[in-house]
Length: 161
Image 1 (cartoon, helix red, strand yellow):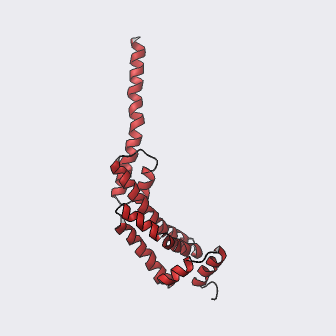
Image 2 (tube, helix red, strand yellow):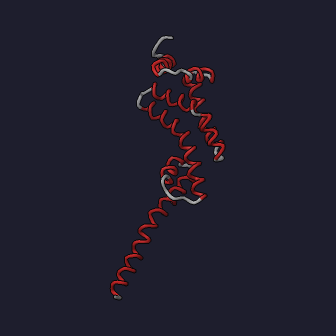
Image 3 (cartoon, one colour):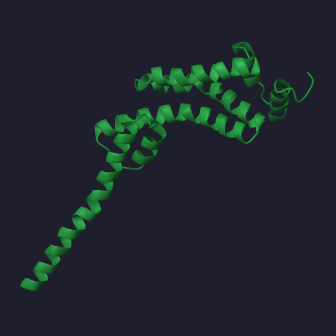
């Protein structure tokens, strides 16, 4: 009786840390990523975990900022692959989703960070492509994919207007 109890106790003693430690380690890494402004990393590390109220706030803030940063990162990735149409589309897509993302940013008190990302996006659209807010709205109002792509290609100088 005693050896079985001892073995079971020892097994439980070994299993509990093995179950708890990985979760704690992941949330510690997520907190560190958040503090270091690695919002994409924090979002990924928090995602799917059971969280405290503080961690849930960090997760939501990271999610909103990461979503905004995704547009700039996507733009840079497409540019590095010489995919200019897709790069410009990424910036225009960011502008289409700006209002909703800024609402979420306000909700989670990260509007300064998200506005900063959007300032960069709008600067790229203006300086690199010569697009005004009116131009952006006009392009983003195009409903047909074919016409939208042609308009982007016109902006890039691939077609004559």
